[in-house]
Length: 85
Image (tube, rainbow, N blue to C red; front, side):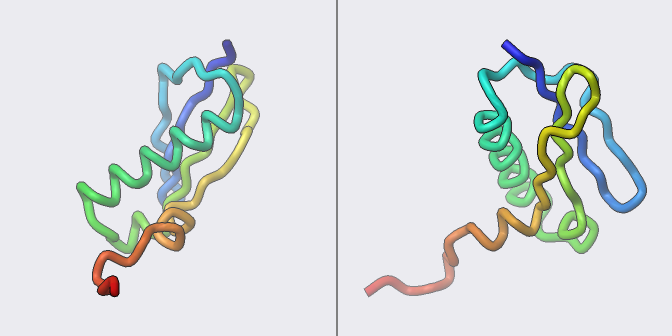
């Protein structure tokens, strides 16, 4: 299985994932990146720096497979303050 690395870019800073994770395909890497962002936003809140952050998923050769902006997750999350009728 291919190995994917989930590096986080916040402004000019890049936080490198040294270990990566073996996953079956890029679609699964997208799901993992999304879950990671949701967890960070839940624990840290929607801080300004995080709203500008991006997870850059790379393959074993260092090529970017996908970029996942944190704001994309926020746009996709249901509004918990809305009442349901």
